Image 1 (tube, rainbow, N blue to C red):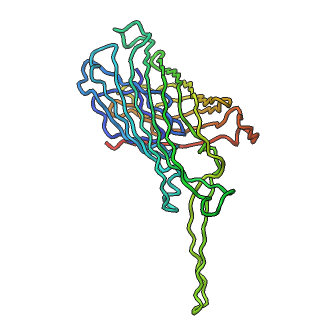
Image 2: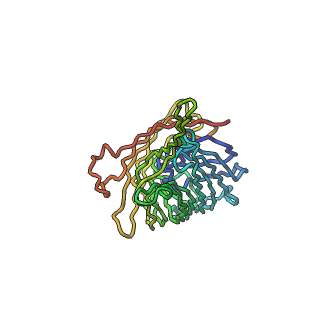
Image 3: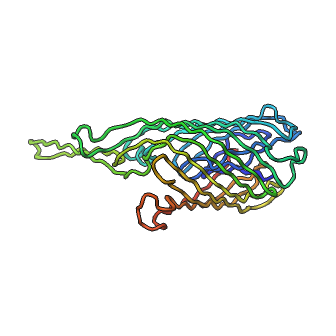
Length: 326
């Protein structure tokens, strides 16, 4: 079975005698599917953890996986838990203005390995599947700007909390091709769609003795526009060509993932995102990890927001890499 850890950028904290299927996040930091923990009769360690950095949403986090009763069983369950944090205005605001608005996300999943696979005693067959019930909960603080109000109230902060629940089904064909379907409910907001602005406040001080004027300038990053929260029903379809998990593999192996994500709401058509991730992976310690990845993502693929600026202008490109701590 193909086994790959994949993030836009990832650092391995520890991997202890356990195999794992693909871990994949898109440029907005959402997982494309719940990964697989694969156990064999010779494995005694039943847990694994890693620390991850995603350059797409500028987050850093940790994931922990545990399969307490899985050794030697063709069908088994395992659970996972994750947490990550980020500055909601990005690291540029932290470094330039000393401005930090925290964003925290918690996630978890309960996964059943083998759902429709009837050959439970043959893990090497041409069909292998797993499904998961997952949740996530986000708590974010945002800086907003509103021009049509009194001066002292134009820049303000607001807090957002959103719960997500869903189902994810995955099946692996001929140990190489992974097809994933995910759908559920999520409380979302339109913060990422608002216009980013930089606010500069200037105070003037004049010294008559030296005939000198001193300007003191402070800067702050915020979003301008109407901030809304809403219920949504996200779905995702992902097709992935996995790299080899043969521990004797030398050099780099090529893999790719193609995905289509949608975000329907009660009042609007789905805002869709289409993307492709191309990556080169290298085998290390029994796990195939990407050494270099290129992410191409088309935002609002069907132009639901009627921007009419051309598809290429809604294209975002990211170059990614990763390395192990040890």
